[in-house]
Length: 368
Image (tube, rainbow, N blue to C red; front, side):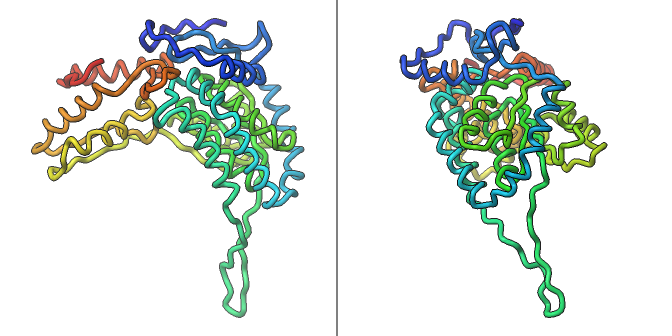
């Protein structure tokens, strides 16, 4: 199934050619997770729209099988205890670092974020760091009552099987945010990546599974039907989701039947305020990256900026000047720090926002 979406970056940009060694590592990692030739769904490069590889298309039956396997594996995983689970998560972080460049290159191609800056290499490094943070967290019993007559302790225990449904903007890092504490506590996890960035997450899970016992961490890459089945599955004890508010509402409805616990990270409308005592030139870089980290595709990104009249023109000029010199292009080109918008749907949203702003009297102050 080919992708009809037009290129969202400059079609004249060519990705920097990797070395033979890097290309071999990239191909080996992709071969471990992609569907066989002639099967699956073609996944395009976010910048060039060339096909990267083929994502498996798991069905509702595959989801049921994955949950059953995770359920069967959970008691033994829990029984290993905190110390052994922590050691395995530390080892998983080591494996991520050992495969970091191949993971970063796959992420850059599929998601679009550049290798450099607070982007692909940063995200892969954050995966290892968050695994280690979860592994190193002490979970001792907490005394909540000890008054001489009553003594009570609070103990944290595993829930069972956790569903982790991730986004396409920070697909690897947010997946680790979801799975690391769940695994640390003795839960098993079934991961459902975004349909836009399945290969990156499948590769990450595959690398982590080099050291984990079988069926403790399982990834399923399917369509919306597969995701809907996962969050509504009666054997899921907790659902973790990062994505749109609309989808979050559907997950609340779908998971109500089995009263699964929920952790939902949904959209925001974050604001910034600039007071009159600032040096516009000094704050321009921070304001820019607050809004445009990951090409603005971040839930916590700055979306509204209120600037005092006294410094308004100077702040606009400083921001425009900084934006004009930020390297933008294909993510694999060394030195690039802003990549394309990841998908056509997001491109259309941003295009519409720009048109609406212009229609309301807004003006474009920096172009590339």
